[in-house]
Image (cartoon, rainbow, N blue to C red; front, side, top):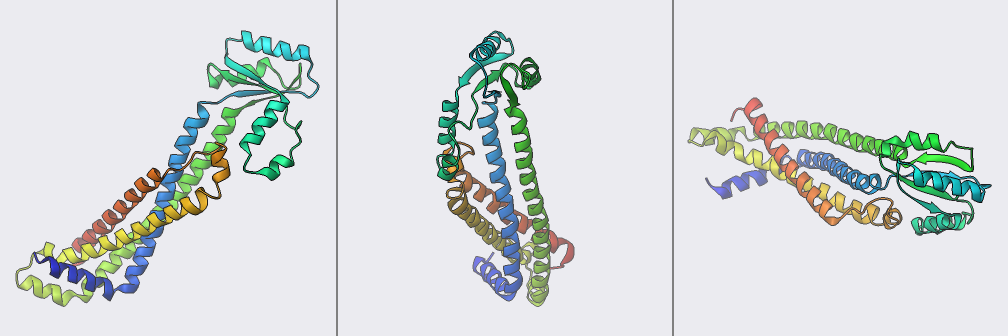
Length: 294
């Protein structure tokens, strides 16, 4: 097989259908970029679940007028409860100090929050986090110095449900874009084969195999898919540098959301580039087998 001839045919094909090739590359890049974004979101959700669900607590917030006797009674009841694995008491001063640390990257919010705005509380770790209702029944809100009882697990479930929805929506749009890219690849290959039908017919007449005449078209699609994958990888890199590392730097430093490591960017870039090459090559091969006679 003459490698130089095949490569020259690939270059010629890309130049002849430059407009459609560019459109194919951009469509592929968008779909792969959305796919990479979905993978990053999925990775962040997984990391956040490991961080937060291991620390799920029930917070018993105390009323502003709670007495020492009521506070001691709550502590004694928590200490004797078989549902409680451990607990800590957090005063108003400690709550405000923790608030300052968590939002240290947002000084305006800290400055506009009074030092006594956060209530004192007991933060309780349960033996079985799903038995929140038992603790809520033992410490009814509005009675005996208790202002309210809040289950952090319920909030986390709603938060991760929202994040999962965002991930699924991103992947759904990526799938639609991928279908558009596959149709565009198919049309581009059909047009390229039609424009070069005389050349391929002559090659078949002189004994060239079907695979040999198809290979330039498959390589054209694969190269376009690779370029689209590289553009999508560049988009992921820009997303990390300009959005994650800058816009989200405050929540990341505060430990609210996990850091997105470069290893995740690199691995996702390799995945989407490989998917781009594979899908484009397969789409070209199927198109040539079904719709084009070479």
